[in-house]
Length: 295
Length: 314
Image (cartoon, rainbow over all chains, first blue to last red; front, side, top):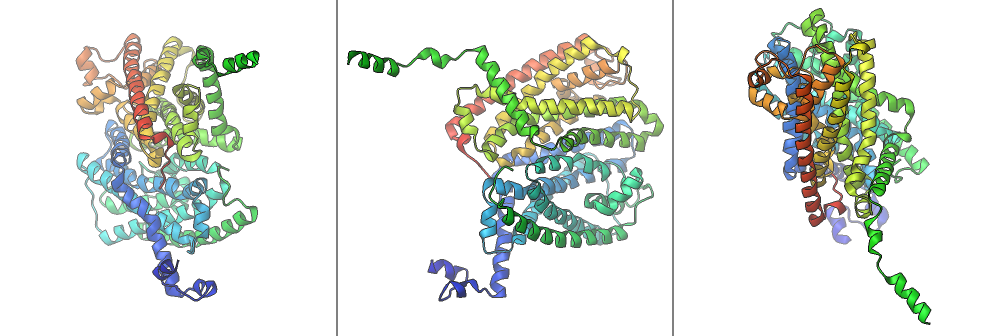
């Protein structure tokens, strides 16, 4: 026991002293928690060979189907590029829905949730760890789809503003995973409906985000999507920046404005996630549902 | 004393006949109970309105994505292909439900409820239990198909003539297609027995790959010849072509056409009804037998490796 106390650097003469942590100890423990929660997702990349087939190759084939739809219609080549970029970003959206939003409900079903709450760390560390691990996991799939599909289907990117494109990508991930953190608390409260909500937020969101076509074609619906759905905003901004030469239907804001929207979404979602986590914890403790499984 | 000993001997005697069960009656009862359980797990606890929305939102959104893609490129000229993409995307939701249903039953029971080992050692045939569990999701998928088609006709202007429907072809293609989908679901169930919790997305990924080669939303002609060949060996290709031809006779087809592999091999542009049904039957039988073989192999390996008793997590 003494050895373990020394390990975390908080030896004391009694429990009260041991519980009195310095700011450094708190931050270090939270950072360790982030790393610990991200670890299984990152290391899982190397320990499950079937993952390569099912998470990379087969989704790439699904993306290819939409490429061939455009080919069957003799569409301009940049539309193939739209599909490839959209296919790459779906990796992040699926990860957000199934491995962020649904995760806390899963953890509850597996009996881990009460351990998280009992552990001496801020729960946001768990969410950040899940997000970080998920980003690494999904980035490999997205990069593979981009590289392979780009090479096979002859997609030519025309980028004038690399820094802005990188910024949009980072902010899109921030907004997406911020939304995932918010949804994680919501889904936990919704219980078993979480599964259905996850299903409900896949194809319909692809549609309103203009996954395979310019979102401006959806008119008012597209405008609302750009304002409120990070996938739509990020995708539209990235398309404008990655296909600078393409004739784009008018109707969506320029990338610089969409950067601001994404930044606002990121900040708002992270603050909302923290608030919702506190509210959810309070409600769950009050109702005694933290450890009640499968409901 | 002697009667007591005799009674004790009778009680201890192992009645072999009881282990054999009641054959078909037991199988049917197992199937019915598993199907009911599947439905209860899937739907009967949920808010009916939310469940309805969830069941139809996915296929309708898929169809809308394709319809907008047609509009973006083809404009009014692309509307001729609306029946093609609406039927393809509606049927595809059924495929995904069928393939995922069996695999998710394994994952749910092993990872979430942790009862797979108990189900496995119960007197019921495990294969029948799985198929019964999958039927509930097939039912949900079927509702999605019907509603998507109705939305296609009512809201998207897909021209539909009930009198023109080829009902015998529709019935034959539907029955044979259903068998093939269950076969593919069984194949996927055999695979997820071997993999870990993250396998939730595997059935959809597998279905997504088949989406490319089956001509669900574009004609096979645009694919390279070797990929067309893979498509022609897949029962789903023939099923979709059969249903499409039955619902919209004479409309754009997915298999043949100028320059297609089918036309170059068989010498005529498009398959006839008998060819569609014959090919669906042949490929369906092969896929189903292969799926059963893979499932049995996987089952044997799972038993020897203790996989039924193992939960994963990440």
